[in-house]
Image (cartoon, rainbow, N blue to C red; front, side, top):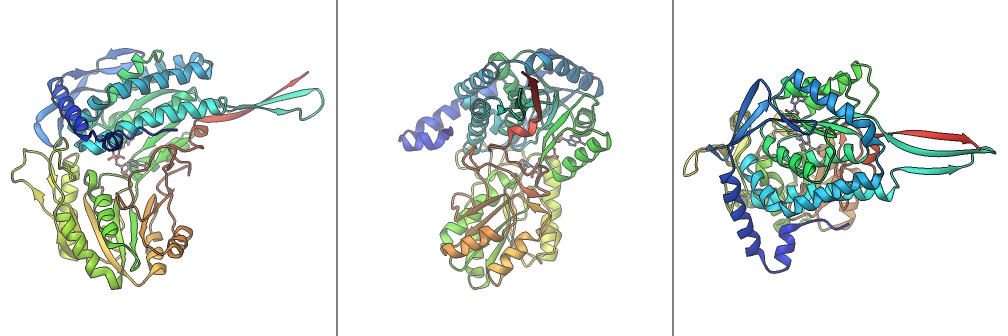
Length: 521
Ligand code: NAD
């Protein structure tokens, strides 16, 4: 399986300039098309709703992304009913007929990848590298899940003859209608991954993107329709979490939920689903509070760069972002000083600008959260760099400084809760044992990192750390950046509900239930 890796491919072929030219041209052409109204997508038609909401770019409030229908209960009813009606035919399609649609959709996305990446930069603020990685990952999900379904022959096999004259086929079958609820931070890859997982296995879908990122979801809907997906298999509803997400996930005809987002919302959905007496799956990928250990055996150049990129790329708005760092006492001062220097070099600005690492944060809620936590960091600890909202020399948008904090006790909320912002706390530890104990002292268990040139120390860390994703000496980023198939992605503890990983071999089975069919011959 070959991952897309667009920027890397351009770099390796010595034509990185072409990458930048194509991206910049795409930004201009996407901008020219912004501002339109988009209805809901139900049963292949564009459908209006009583209310509308506007989305503006987080990096430039003068840039209107568009106006979108704000759905509610009645729109959920219509969408779930379209998905229910489409299910029987879709379930019984040959697997090749189903995978053909997603393979074609992946090709269409590949053709449109610069446009899709530019859309992401403008709609959610991602810089060009991160935006293209989001698109590449989405393409990878479509291809990988198609390949997995084919490779497993649709999860169907003969068990042989359990008793004389009887023949049994064992297979996995879809559940029916899945509600798919996606976050703002990987609004294409995660939406595409979850919905493709559900649909390629024969379920039908009603999908709700985050309210900050509906445009990219519409572009994904266009791609699926162009690829020949039958009407009603994928329905797209846009609107608020409570007003729309809640009635959707609680709808009586929804058989399963695939959710990626915060722990609070995901666990709430799971609780209600069970209280309704439903037995289907709630596949929820939740938050993280990702620790990194820096040993005195570390290459400090690697560690500084890995932590800075892990904590601050995409402004820390990743479930996998590095958020607490445990540094051996004898290198604590040197590491922290160098991290501060590196942090101060990072470009803050609009996603589409070439040198941006720290892009705008997504909404006013994030900005308020940033003000609150940096205020607390000033009173309860030491802000070593950052801590302020940026309002100079930038177009009106939500820009904040990447922030490094020390002198915060490990038990403090700032070092325990997920903030989803460019904010990292750095703590001294006596050695590996304390580093692992503190890393594990968390309700989350998504990503973790270590920097150490001592292989035996790294091995002990792998064995001891409670985390789904574990990265040693990852200088590009200490904790972020998993590749489909190569690094299946998911979390332990409250970072996920099923323990099965996206982009991995056990992902698709979650969307299906087992049946044994025995015939007397
Ligand atoms: P969020 O929980 O606020 O929202 C996620 C989605 O849920 C949105 O579409 C939102 O509109 C919807 N929603 C909100 N309230 C709802 C309700 N009551 N019922 C149904 N739906 C509701 O999360 P976010 O801010 O969009 O994304 C950030 C969170 O996502 C972070 O916690 C991050 O760690 C997590 N995340 C996890 C992964 C992973 O793979 N584990 C990946 C990306 C993001």
